[in-house]
Structure formats: structure tokens, C-alpha cells
Image (cartoon, rainbow, N blue to C red):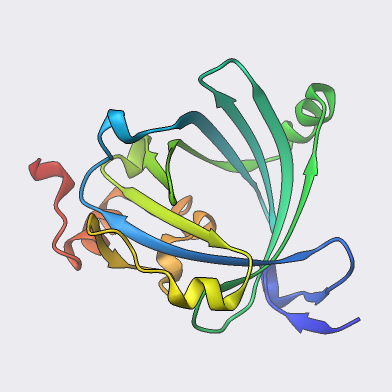
Length: 188
């Protein structure tokens, strides 16, 4: 096994057969996509478990399906599309309920699929943030991807726009970050 450093309090991480490399590029959008372009919609509620690298997710799809999962994301501090290692475990409702009792920071958003992007439209104190992501299976795919014109700026290497950081951000911080890219959601 290869030992890496990262995550919460710089804890040691051992890569193994269950974690997979996550290739992803992220982009800011000025507004949500047109409803006619959307192929799938789901409401996502994430619980970032306090003091860990764990995220508990509930995704409610527009067709009535519900997906419950526990995810561990281990960031790899390097520029580019390799975001790190990710491990997912799908849960039963009873398992989800047990884990949902743990202290956590909450983040909610609506994710719409607009191929080739998944677009997150955030709620609550992050309202006005529209973040798109494209996922890949190889580094070559990620490097050759040309983002659609509606992508205002690429923020792949900007850790402020990762879920673990966004869940901790204040409204004031978010508005400042978006202003750096010429986005002013409260003015719209």
C-alpha cells in the first residue's frame, strides 16, 4: 500500500482496493441551466461528519428514487483533474439513520444533469452559487475536455469550491469569492 498524507488533521491515508481515483473538473456558471436541457434532477442533502473526511449523502430523485451513501474523499494536493481518492458505500435507510445521528455540517443543493455536466444549484447560505462538474475515467479525457460556453471560470484547483470547504463558508465569504469571478448573485 502507498501511504499518503491529507484530509482531516493530516492523518495518514492508505490507498487500497476499495478507493478509486476521482477525475473531476469544476466550473462556475452564472445561472442554472434552462429546464429544457435537464435530463435528471435530484435534491441532495449532504452531512459532512464533524472531525472526519466522511460525507453522508441523501439524494432524492424526481422519479421517487432515493440514494443513500457514505463517502470518504481523500484529497491529493496537486493541480489538475485528479481530485483524490474516493470510496463510496451504499446504505440502507436504517444504516443511514444511524449515521445521520452523528454531528455534522449540512449542505443542500439541487443537482441537474445537463450532459456532459452535473450542475449543482445551491440552497441556504450558498444560494446563488451554481457549480458544474464533469467527471472522467482517465487523465487524458480530463485534459482534452472543452467546457461549454456557459462555464464562466474553471475552479478545479480552487479548494474553496469543494463541498468540504463550502459547507464551512459564510454567506459573506461566498459572495466575495464569486465577485472575484465577476459573479454577483444578489444583483440578479
